[in-house]
Image (cartoon, rainbow, N blue to C red; front, side, top):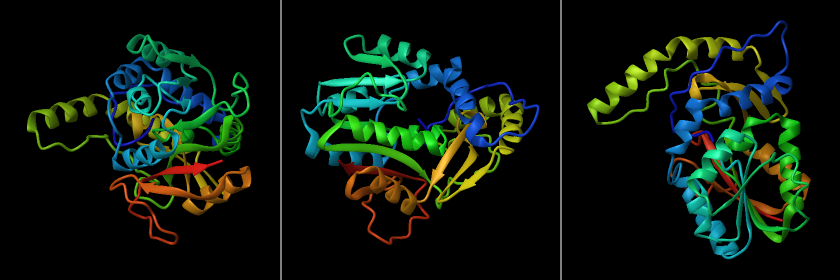
Length: 288
């Protein structure tokens, strides 16, 4: 959902008659961003791994979960469908944005893709899946209480010894507290770089208004923060968490043992106590 991929996203500025906490407005703001036609078009063309960390985490899960039923949360327009179906064809995708679900169904008509919310997986029985995945930092699109609900539901639908794989932004990493940016990804191709700069300039006004409007909803909690992220022209509110706080939360929900954690940029397996300031986000692999 959120990574180094860029999008030519345009959305209306946030308007509020009085200040609200991020937890109260986060869901509405982010749902609007995901359903925007420009977001859907962008996500329809995404393919492959987001980064080395994702690939390492999925390969780690594959070693345990080959052939097991998979639940792919936040499937979006289907980037992860071929990556995960290589592990098991017993697969179902879920996303709460109807427009993205329709795009995914059109691209993969032979795959079961449902419209639903990761915070409520009541349509699935206990211990239904061997692997639950929430990629692309999708879990960071909801507030702290809803995030815990997602993890509880993932734990419930996992079979014993099943695996949860998800990515999440690092509050101590370089992506935290991003300042206003035009969001131009670097490329050695001068023509491509020029096109990206032109697109970014066309959207600069909307990006600036989004940044100003959403920055008021900053919120700090115990081990986490909510900030306006640079993705999709600054149209999102993003949950950032420390490695320690995320590990503690997983243990409190009932996941067992120390999770395996991979850094996004180089895919290295992080050691206990290792400095993580160079990791913008983590990929967690943890067992029930």
